[in-house]
Image (cartoon, rainbow, N blue to C red):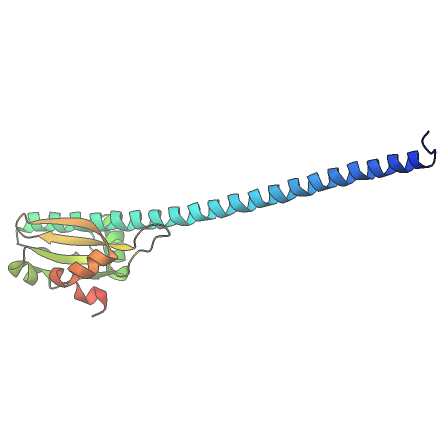
Length: 179
């Protein structure tokens, strides 16, 4: 027959065991929830940074396209072989055009000699971003306005930094590379 004193202690140790097991389960649940929260926050931060990079690159590309359209319009209106960027204070320019030209002049590199280079080369670099756009995921690069002499058009191209380094001298954008 079991000892009367042993029975309550066994119940007590079983109750303690259940309490300890429940406590451990709660601790693991809290740790898992914390780890999951931290992981989700890190993923959201990475997505935010990647999105910020893409928005910045897209906005710069839109400004370059506006500048290229301005150049194209000026070239077609005046019928020279090439055109120059207008003065940012031009009263006939829209606010969007003024902002694009101003930002290009402030943050980009404008090749004032591209018209002379276009005489001897099929392509000439008109302008490019002053510094490469960095991406959290993917290759860094720049927007470049290229004058296509044979078609007499201004085109905006995205170039990876490696491609830009390879083509900068041919396009006449060596100064944009810091050389």
